[in-house]
Amino acid sequence: MAVLDFKEIPEAHIATGLQDTFELFARDFLAFIGYKIITDPDRGADGGVDLVVEEKRTGVGGETVIRWLVSCKHKAHSGRSVNPVDDANIRDRVEANECNGFIGFYSTLASSGLASNLEGMNGRIETQIFDREKIESKLLHSAKGLQISERYFPVSLSEWRTENPQPAQIFSVAPSLKCNVCDKELFDQDDKGVVTLWTKDRIDYAAESEFIEQVSWTCRGRCDDLLQVRMRRDHPNLTDGWEDISDVMIPTIFIKWVMSILNQQRDGALYSDEAFSSLKSFMLRVFPYVSRHLTTQEKEQIEMLMLLPSYLGGLGYDG
Picture 1 (tube, one colour):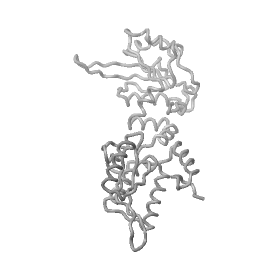
Picture 2 (cartoon, helix red, strand yellow):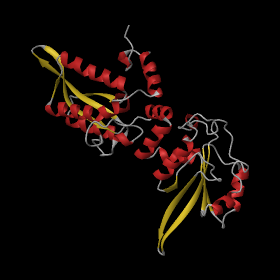
Picture 3 (cartoon, helix red, strand yellow):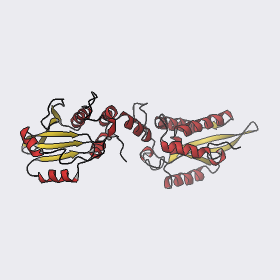
Picture 4 (cartoon, one colour):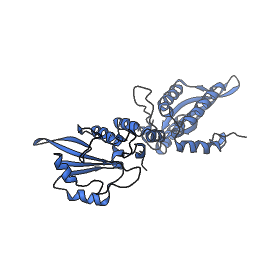
């Protein structure tokens, strides 16, 4: 599904003062991916050229400079493809402007007829097309590309960032949470694994209260099973209570989880030095992923959890 809505860029044929925006976007995009801008967009007669850019290719025989004629066609508002009439006489225009190749920069797609015309020019001039999908794929995979996207597609990028959250830049290093068994990075996995609090009952002045002996995080499945076997062998009096790490990374669940820990401490729960240090470490590592908006999927998950009582792991009231 497309992320960037090219309709955010004003139409090119309506004189609003912003009719050059798509050409300016083409200039910034091509500079971003490495082309040198030779001529900028202007509002005069363009002679069939919107931009001229250069590409330097370095090989065994030295450096070769390729000069490209760039033709911008912004048809996203109509949804039509770019046909041979829209981009006619390509070879003549390339040669007239002393270029070696042609770049079609389109907010939709090249029609099959235009694609056939370009294919027929192979061996005479170089041609390439940047359509909406190629443009989007390059923009969304780098910090600089995201900056350009934010300038020209502010609404689309805001929605995309909400649905594809990245950790907040709170600390000087990127957050990391490695499995206590296999040492794999849990944040890099689709299934983030589980965090487990290992507790034992204690009698303190005739009042029963929890004592958290250890806090651990592991991959779900084999690593979690191996840790449970080890813990129950070495500490047979411990019981485990776990949470999905992906759930804890949801802002609403994180707050609920922190509140439950505070309530346990209020009720007399104690932690070993190791467990308390591990718990603080876990919360600090997860928090950059929590400091954000809820995604649509997470909002739906919260609504579902609200239907379940807390004793079943939900957010609802016990009634």
